[in-house]
Image 1 (cartoon, one colour):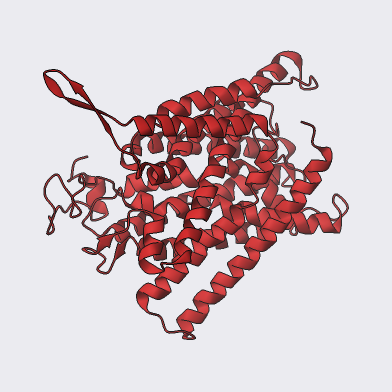
Image 2 (image 1 turned 30 degrees about the vertical axis):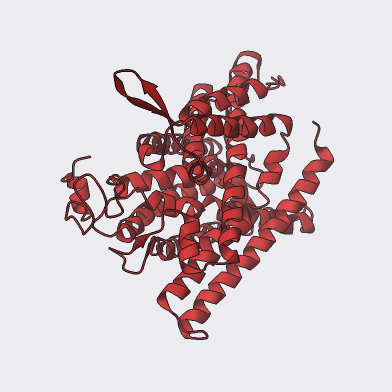
Length: 464
């Protein structure tokens, strides 16, 4: 990328002043010079944040209503942005420009908190990443099956059951991920994230457009101020559903588990934290706008009984070709997002691996990272097999999401910020930060409770 790109100048990224220990080709830590910008970092964040879950926000809004739904979305976005700025400041220890780099989330926790919290961070982060890989495999197969069924409905009518088998689609997705997984590192994924970001805007816009069309067709804006009414569901179901909605909205804003790894692709000057704060602001503003539009318009179109997913739940049947395009965009996005999420996990394991040099007569040895090839291929195969053998796992995957969101997006950033800034205990700032921490913890527990209730309910009607 050219150093003097006009977009970069607008964000103060056009300067190229070498620091001590750096050169034209190497950064101050001796690694190959990073080239990431506000735009590539924003693309990574948007790829991580706007998942197919945006299409389920109409359901979440229906549980909370016209008042609480939009307010909760805005509040979670605000909390995520604030804590992401705290976390971005932890990329370097000491001086924000010349301090020692923390390449991963675990490195940042180790540098600031140390001890058992490092292991806890790693456990939460990598379990969530593993769960996301399985969830994305299954979600992509649902979208591919939706395309199959959409074409079937078009030919045979909407009352035809049009059953579809998801196993071939999971296998196809797995083969694709085996190929993509050989991309070595985060900084070489920028083009994939840009494609994914375009795809996320594509299916979100189509879902929004179909919602607007349905409102125009019926001539009414459905829904109520307080959400789904008792009568359509029991009072206890109303409570559990509201808790699940909180968890869905919280998890929809979560990208903190890969924030430090994204930040490690950003060039400097200016400082990486400054660039990352701007990228977070840009991406969260964009994603929140899409969340509000898709969630609210879906609720306006379907009222108290929206499908769990506007595209795969067949809230819309026509125009079928547009629904097909949207679901295809979901699959492309998930194929890219899978890699964005898995890169930190890949890198964590590969730190223990080595390259193999294959001697070639008359030429330089060819460096083959056999460990990367075998390990990443095995990882994709395992996640694909779990997706195929245990399809109900998608309901289990959501259970650790809210607690993972609290730990990685709220708890650790606040604790590291307090330690880094040496904020006195019981000072006004310390109390405010702890209130935010405790409030998010309570919401996370409530969301997990709602998810458990949802799993129990689904178990009653689940057929393998």
